[in-house]
Length: 155
Image (cartoon, rainbow, N blue to C red; front, side, top):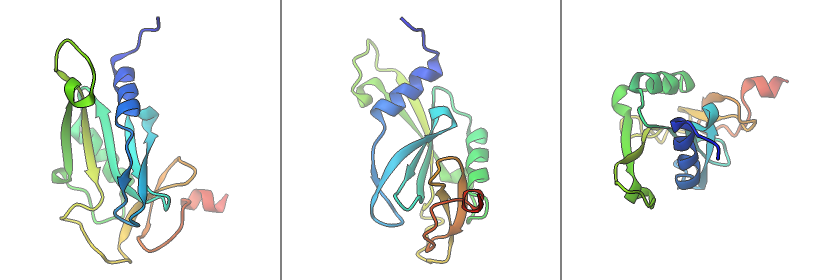
């Protein structure tokens, strides 16, 4: 039997039980979950590559680290403030896991691109996208249809 580190267990639980689709706020299509940072970060991404939500999974989450990660990814958008980040606790009963106790199994820290504070219907507003090659974020006007970051377009 392989011994998993606690974070590996959290990542596996997140991938197997929290890999849901959501309605995309940009196109109305289905945003599927993709993973970054070795699986500890989930992204709701639509076929147009718009990032609806960034989610970090773990037992203990560092708000400053997550905020730095999102700010780095979303550089050039309307800005990310600490109040834009939400935290959710997932319990065994919530995840349908049979465990002796119903303690917290993992936590999710998440940022949604279109919070009410930053909600805008302006098609020229700058928005966050994830490269179709799955390796980087990029910012472009919401109405643009580009699916590749600058680096991938020029190579």
